[in-house]
Length: 401
Image (cartoon, rainbow, N blue to C red; front, side, top):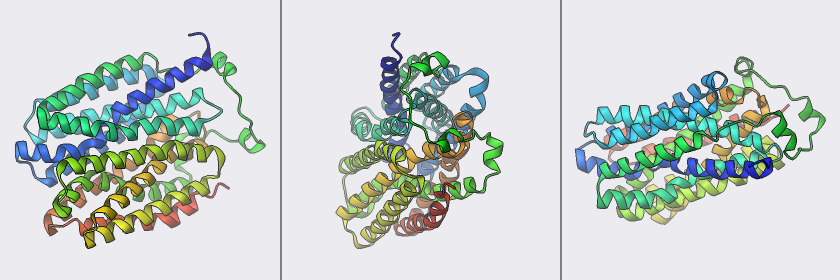
């Protein structure tokens, strides 16, 4: 295709599909029950698997940032397709939780982080006129994956078991991701000249591209990182434990809980292009305040719902919190681009993506609290405190000058 404007939309759709499949990690709570029943694993053990996956995700994103200038994004995607596909296929053939930690957590996690960073780094560059909106649309695919894949996973798990489910997604992901790697390229100077121009202000024209070292010497970065970490901790905790909590404490069936997870994913996905659009139109300060408000209200409602056994309210609160997580997910790359520029974005973004690493211990902590106390009440209360604690930090980080 010689028309650059047409080609960029093909890239957008293709990578939307890739992220849709990549988000299989968010469906982990659907696998928890069947794996525990099949192999006798405990809730603490299965919670740790998700934690390791998030650690692998952060490591993969960081690795992509390091390799971006050395081997290019296309080769990074090829390597990642092998890691994700191979990791899931290997997971299908193990009954050892220790091996699953390596195949699912480390290998698949690394690959997911590498592809995620690559797509967010490359594709928005083809849309200089609406980077925030495109970032949100791409990440909507990642978030909607649970809504779309959870019923499919549930059917495969019930009909064929964990082995066939992991094997199916391992092969599918490998083929699609490998094909996508051949189209993973940044626009060159000639192609950029054909793309729509964006109206820039004097401040935009004078915006500096910060190296990673310069970014890490910025106090604002650490304030934002800590605030984002508190929010992501809560979101990951809910993603991992809402379905088990609904079943064990509210008496909901596994099938119904899977549909709740799908609804949460839908809210997560819908919020992302909306957040991206808001970043194109409004200040960072405004968007970050909206995010904090959504998190604080939804987390508080979830604690009340759990303690009062109000199933419907817990479902509503969980969906609202994942709506906030969608805003947060889209905000991470937008904030880094706005504050620190495009030139070193891949590496800079890989650093801020370490929130997934530092926050990944929350699901294990919540799982441990549930095992020790026999209830999710304490774990949910801790997540609500984290959401409230993020408010002053994100308010300070949102100050652009």
